[in-house]
Image (cartoon, rainbow, N blue to C red; front, top):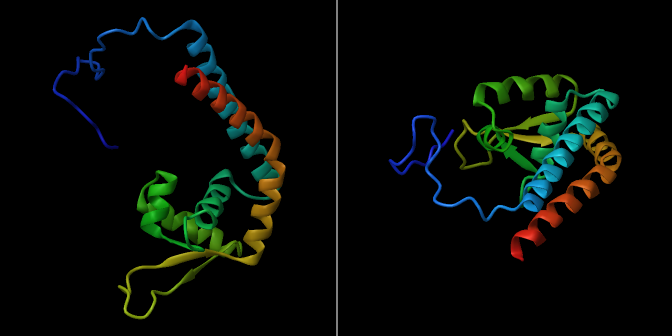
Length: 156
């Protein structure tokens, strides 16, 4: 975890805030609504993943790989960052997903450090990911609406 400190933190780790009176009740309500929508989305994701025969972590792995910007693969280090888990945990997660035929490892490209292993979603993993994306469409809309409401209010 990255910690940004200024040296002015109190004993509980919170930095002193000069004036919080400008945070309105309505803003707190919109923030709570966004958090609730995110939790609903997370819970629905867990349910749909299990319905698809995945663990929630396997679904997030597939999503992180396939959704990696600009390419169809991701390295173990990149996946650890995207999933916010330890490198060792990513290796175990990839191992289990590979055993199920959801992902495949690719060796380093010619001229690339041979220790770098890229992970790709297999056709079976792709099909499962597509089903999950479809099943979560309404939940994504709910989160988007809540996030937009908070964003609009903060611009006013």
